[in-house]
Image (cartoon, rainbow, N blue to C red; front, side, top):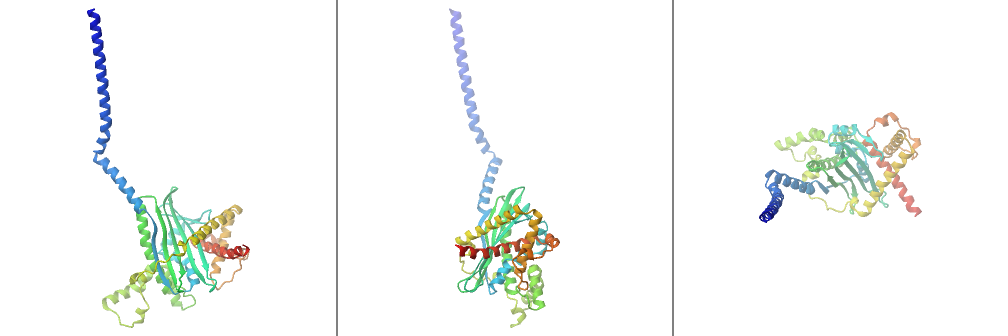
Length: 389
């Protein structure tokens, strides 16, 4: 009897000890699990890393992209068709690149893609450039009422989009008959922190220089063809290398005027009026620009899609070499149409093209001329479509 009782007592003690051990183990694991996150948040490096990541994400979301990120305008007394020719030609690109070597570097590796756009050196990686021209003619005067060049720059690296930007150049005729030129940043979308903020800042500063130099060139030196040789030389210098032009013709005279003054009525000084940004004048009324109007936005979208479809149809019909010849021929037609000294029929087969020269010509210039050619074709098609409807 005593032996059985002792066995039962020992078994009960063992069960109690097992229960206590299991309970202690459960409490220990719960304590470890609950204190682990607390110990991580007490680690200053961990907290700093999480905080920095959140701050960087917030800053990038707030400053890495922007809509309507610049809007500069100036008035010009120049002829509407001359302004359309300038904004639709290669002259604007020369001013946009600031220095000739920048344009040479960008265009040296430029090639056409399947959609008629350009692929060239990016910052960093590869940059895709696409442009579309849209305009309208005043039926009463027969002059260009407004002109818009929409240009998209998309920078990729290993297939990933680093930044994507759309800018618009052009002019519009206001109600009082004056012409207002504009440079407007439609949007900038950046996907890489720090790089996005840096590129956005660079483009904002760059845009101010471009509109300054454009106004200075257009209102003072552009469209001097047929005048004196000296004026034509000044026009070319102003367009090809504006910084050197300002240094050569303005910097020294401005410095001496600041130090020693100049005589009142000095015609050489009176002709050299400072640009509108330096005068600090009030901005013109911010009327809605052509590309900001809903109807024109729809038309621009249709123009972009029509250009893509035209290039797809061309690529499906001809081999790449033949496509390049056709593009070169169309670019030649567009170039000659803008020159009043040449009269060219609309038949592409009647135009002789130096294939070797076309193969080595500036791809951006060709793309600009092709965009102008496509715009001209759309202009001739629209009245026909309207008449049939």
